[in-house]
Image (cartoon, rainbow, N blue to C red; front, side, top):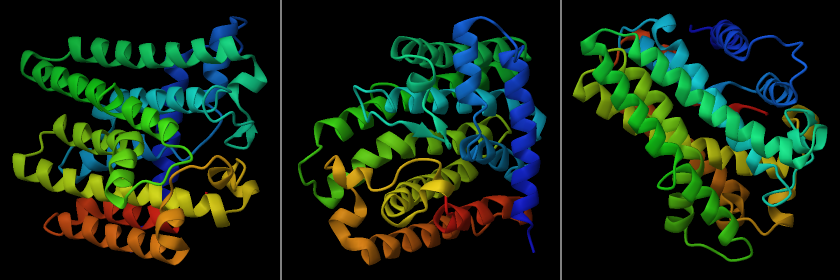
Length: 297
């Protein structure tokens, strides 16, 4: 039986070590570096870099080869959390069990820390790609383009915009799915897709992994919506009940708690079907799919 706990611990440690190397001296007295490091190294599930590495391994790739990509993706994710927590957005006070960046430092520093992490992520990607062989450089350029598209105004940012715009209104299930596929799902999808791309995945493998990633990306958001209602704030590291207070569009709000949990289970089943032709190198992806909906934080 696949030992997901050990797998996650090993990959997370590798990613944390990589992130620390990119961020440099933890004792830096440069305020912006303090804020960047504080937010990135505050903990978290590291789900996106783990998925990136698991997808690479599923098609025969090596962890070390995609580690820069995995670290860059986690920096982009952290930037999005810093900005999402700002007073102008969700105005959250805690994240990963600690004061949010703008609470720990100040709002201006938090904005700049997010900007700096996003920029550093693409510096890492471009620098890594530029040092590859001519054949590999093409794949890295494609990956950079896909990441940029996924987190830009056609992807994650548009999803965040919709999330804010539609507060207090009731969306259809189709519109809610589109919102969450953009806001949460696109970065998860691209974590899987680019990890596989840089590891030589065939077109058939990439298509199957895209379906897998789309399903677990949406399931992750459904599970997040459920945890915002019934989760333990201590384990989550952030307040619960906030979605309802802000008039957010959520799956429990639209389908009821039981309906949302049922949908999450269906999505995971569909994700697993998408990769049923993969061999045991994809067992990590299968285990992660279950973890997405069974997690308590």
